[in-house]
Length: 79
Image 1: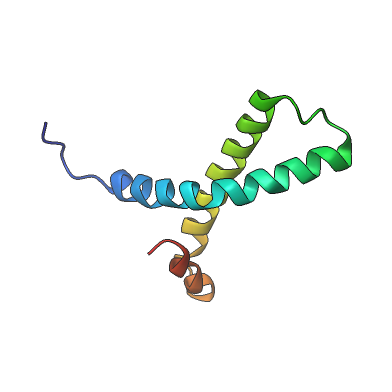
Image 2 (image 1 turned 45 degrees about the horizontal axis):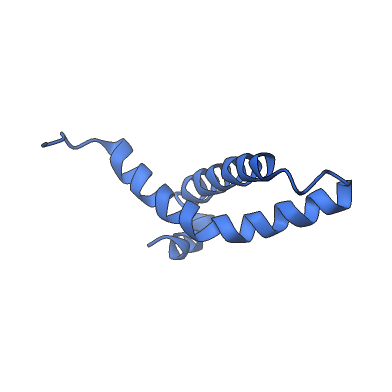
């Protein structure tokens, strides 16, 4: 299957690698936050969904900020 070139494909490729690399780090932060707030950490589904959402948000934020001159150093995280 040949897919036409589009800007979103580059963004998805970059964000997928960031999600992969930040997932475990964010997961450990979510676990610590759940224990501090006394949320039942045994709920694996809730923990996964929270970690996934935060990983996606973090990757989009990193990619968006890295486009600005002041935050260009963030490109080292995914390139």
